[in-house]
Length: 360
Image 1 (cartoon, one colour):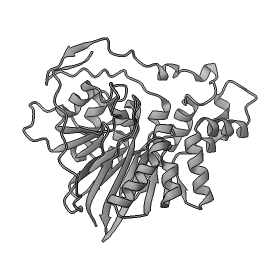
Image 2: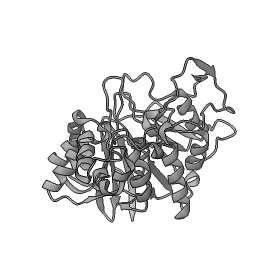
Image 3: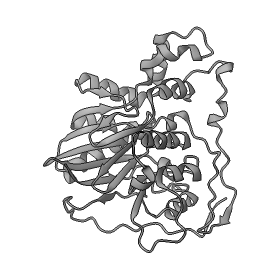
Image 4: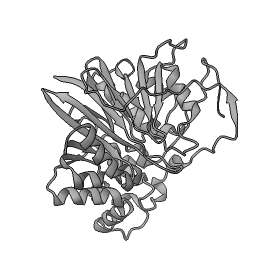
């Protein structure tokens, strides 16, 4: 039986670039379990270690999860693995599939070994994490849809889509054959906003045509049920991954819009990762009126000096769906349920307002 859950978002990023470092603890059968989901860049691993020691009173992490291999998510996990005892490491290992994907690429001279080595070099933080785990005999598992990580179920990606649909499209992969490049527009980013428009509760300015990188779409999306609450961690997932996670959840009997009470806003609140359609699929449709007291919570990791994180249009979209939205912006924030220990020095969070103007 699970009693209580704490989800802590640590601040990552001092400049304009944001990252994720999330520590989760729950009580299961009279024992605490700890899961770390991403570790920010290399510099923030020490903060995660100190957080676990101080607030969780532990030197042991049951599950270390790297959502995807970008350095702003994988970098700090190495320090955690080297300075705490880790039970299991969950991460994707794209270089392990070089023999399955080599034929997709333009350069016929590529061998399985050279392709694997290229991917390891391009994803140095994830490669170092894998190497350190192997040296310590820590079991490594890949977070594919249907996998169980403690109380969390992986909802996306599936192995087949990851290996054949995503890894060949990674920006860090070699050039694809021309006939395999039908998804070249996958990496086209729409231009930044030129201005602002007035926003209203009954109108949403999220286009359905946004795209993000294949690396982001490979993010391991996790979901757990604790009591009456549902907890969704999304990494840097884009609309393809969010749509896939909703479909997979439905196939195993999870109605995400009805179940999700807490959600991580994908990719620091960027507007290239969510659409009206996908938000409706994972957290439900907009409410007709502003709720007096929102019953659901959404958190977003955003660097203190990141001017574009989170986007106001994204924040408003979650507010419309009955969420109160909290952001890190240079400080740690925590979401917790009854039954979790009190913390000295932690006070109420100030939630973001509904913005009357949003990015055009």
